[in-house]
Image 1 (cartoon, rainbow, N blue to C red):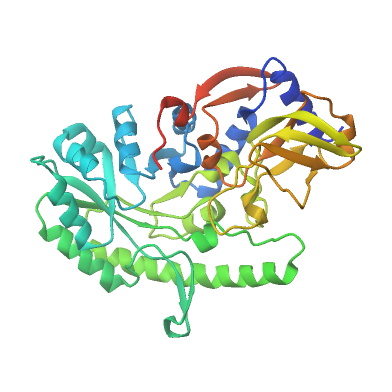
Image 2: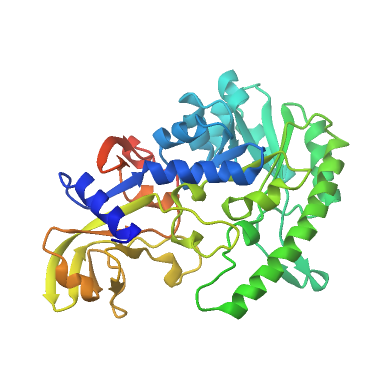
Length: 400
């Protein structure tokens, strides 16, 4: 029996009393992935990205481990909710225009002490001040650096379009503007190199493309390490007592941690290891989060139909954004239908061994988006469900 077949047998036994659709997290794999992130971080703390987890119980579990410290959140409303729930260090990774949430933040000492907001434009400070509604708490601020690699005098750009602050001088200018402004305190710098951390460099069946990606990423790491160090020096000239410099992501943990200027690493997807993180030479993890759909039809030889399953991930549309049939091994989509809204036909010889009501296990493409489809996660240890915990959705929250 292969390791995957053994996992399927365990998952089927553990959930035999549960009807699909359902979602699970294999805690042994989850914990092993967490330990690997800490190992790769080389002694620097890992700030867990909540958008990749979207389950308070699992955030608590990972933050209880040595090597993890703090949360990187994705909306201001989520940040305040987490802070009210007892999380004491929440860094909002994206600028917000949530005026009501800013009023709450500026009016509550506990929230203001726990939450740091992201800024890359003085206009964002204007919005925060206009939203205070009488609240006088000092707002903790993190400045975001654009990490994109620019070639040929800027005519070629590699990387996400995030912050407008690319040069040390630009970041320092905003730092001075924030420092002059009452009611704000600069505490950190963030720089997420998505073109390194979030792009696999070992694309199956594409050796030339993989080689090109590795060359690009090596050049990007060198350029960013030098520029990030210059940015940190420039900002420390304005704010000598910065609390943190955050960088990286699941796919670049050990590379980013090697930079002296970086004090902490961000990661989250590496806990679940969705399918988009299969194609990396820098690390390998164990899929810990899966979902199961029930077989509801047997249309013919070598074909079964499962209920639903069409859960595409965000990003540029393509086959890699779809979930992938995982267990039993050997199933594939009908190319004319793909993953369906209400039903999904699956082809392959394993279909002939599946009965009505059996479970087919899938891996989703992007980590936390699975939790937008399910209101609970069944936590598996060995061949038993040992707990069932709510996702954000299960607690009544869909922050985006």
